Length: 385
Image (cartoon, rainbow, N blue to C red; front, side, top):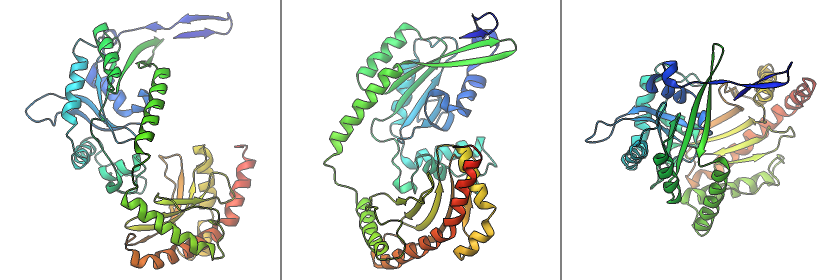
């Protein structure tokens, strides 16, 4: 890492330090940094426990336990200036211990973490933080019954240290060749005056190798699952959307005329404003219609939401009821929705649910058509586009 002197057109190295020299410790510093900013490891991770010691017949503790976006457990082992000889063996032990954890156990582990470290915290709707809800939001799943966690031998290993011994890197590379998902991250502290800089580089596998491996894995997974029959709930959803879209075809609401049935719990249609689709949601216990504000920029999304929210009273009046306005400050997107409790998978009531979806979406489009176009024009004047 170098600094640039514009006047002399020269570069100068930033001073490299060790954690020992700086007085930092593994538990109080490195572990806390990663617990609060796991994206530093190159992907979205949900930390569900730290200093986890819930293993039978052993007092061992793993540093950080996380979930990735595929519902796999991620074991994160941190060392300071030297990885030591036994870090791989340590991580493998913890992975084997975690392999038997069930979905309910994982939810309970995360709930204990939230109760201890996030006590009193609320989500965007003002409700107390709940482990199951957070996991579903992180995995973009409608409910816990849809979530798959810790399947088979899917556990991943991440090792973080300032320096890795050759016996560690050699073993890690061999494990990669055997199909074990293992990564090594080198953490280097730098000082620039009074400021401390931390650089985190993935050294095993290299990013280029990782992309190739992911591509191969995806191809293998596709080949293996091509002949797998869709699960029952996928069939149920597909049948419901067939019935619903047929009703929409015969109505005055033309939003979904060119939309095909889906196995997902949602189907979308364009509103005429980029990144702001209308969604129909079909869940086992809930129906929903919504305007989803999901452009590429958080700033744009919040601008559109706030513009519409200023017209909330008039929009609610036009819709005929109070909508639920979810700015979702901690997320990139925002949402405005209307919901109904329902026994969604009860086919005897499908005609009732289809009628509800049709009626509410027709009202929603009418209520937002003009205000949404106005928001789009206002956005252009703000030089976002």
